[in-house]
Length: 165
Image (cartoon, rainbow, N blue to C red):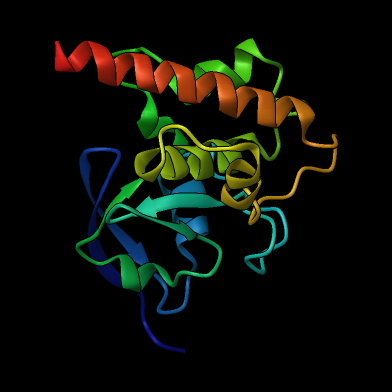
């Protein structure tokens, strides 16, 4: 069996050196080594989105990424969206509009919505559905999630408008 190796990565703005097995999943390193339990394992096959994180700014399913591929990468988890104790507008919108439901899919949904709103700050309902299509929620018909995304889009637009002033 191959030996463990050290990898370096930045997670939520902090530098980390972690010891990993060659094919250990990024998901497991984040949860087990770094104790970032906002990253959830749903299917382990990249189908549900519960393990979504940003890797160098790109949304990925951490259950499909060998940790060794994260060498030198910048990783952002749902915990990393909080800045100076303030929730990201998407996180707050999910709370305000009841999009959290049981909460299991929420971190992946939030990450997908943040990704969507980076490129489209005023999505239509169809664009929202496309933006969260890689995420499964077993609690709902997605109504409250979509309402949360619309609310988040308004909040993000407000923040963008205020930063222009």
